[in-house]
Length: 420
Image (cartoon, rainbow, N blue to C red):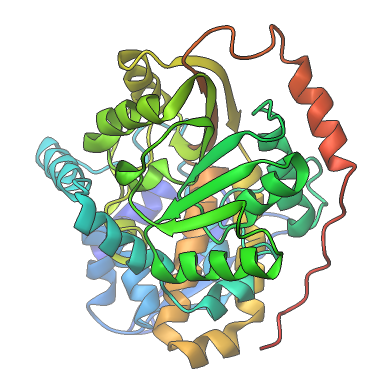
């Protein structure tokens, strides 16, 4: 316990954490805060403290998943947010790997994990997205938007925020009826169907998870638009033809930096000379880094969240002009907070679908991500690209006007804990 005790004494200054070791000895960190309860945690076996201390990013998650770390007052979200609040990104190096050897090793392993040739890309996509459909129904909005929502008001429902996200993005595309749109990494199809519904465009959505594509096709058939909104189980590198617009929402995080040159070369080839490409992705506000080991192992194998410089440099090399950049700072933290709330509400069913360990893993993933977007280096980048500088209007006024128009067109559905 001495090593974990040393780390926590140095780290926790705001808020109060009380840890009870396996032998009943109590350790206190930070100080009582008016109106805020202390977080109380208990370690259930002799080796738990060392397992956490020797690699906190992995050890804490695994200890919680395995029941070696038990939260007795508050919950795992309270614990993770407390720790991250005391180590915000602005406090340089607060949770960074210590020592040059560990940093170099972490960077090397992270780079190797990002090498996503086609067969590996498909395996990684299936690992993440081929969990049961039911799981995603239980915590996502009705349209299954598994990316950052857009909160015009923090009191909005998730359904409203996801609908507003689609309007916010669509407004940046300057779409016209009859255009051809390619959606790379199409998720469960909601974005493609939204574009067709409001702009009368033809959309091709491609992704690598079989169940996602099957579900997308079912939706298109049910809405009677399968001849105009098509979905294919296909790597974007195999797409042919040209498109007026290319979108990717939550796709770049799965590419890996070794594949950025190929991505921009391919999208340059697919985009018409007067076309527009748009990307919405998780991003880091600092310099390039690595994906933490726990996330690579359990949630997004092969994934990497890019810095803005990594995206812009590759665009420059492929003569793609960056015409608009927006950083969504707190929007994903609000999204993840709601996903966590809905996950907890569906605990019994999720445990029945998988087991208690999976449920705790999913909790830890959501709260860790929320903490990273609330206090860490994470934001969401929205970037607009063109091949020709006259492809878009001179000013950004068209975006604001179109977003207002779209937001007035439809109301979001009400959410309820979905019944099977």
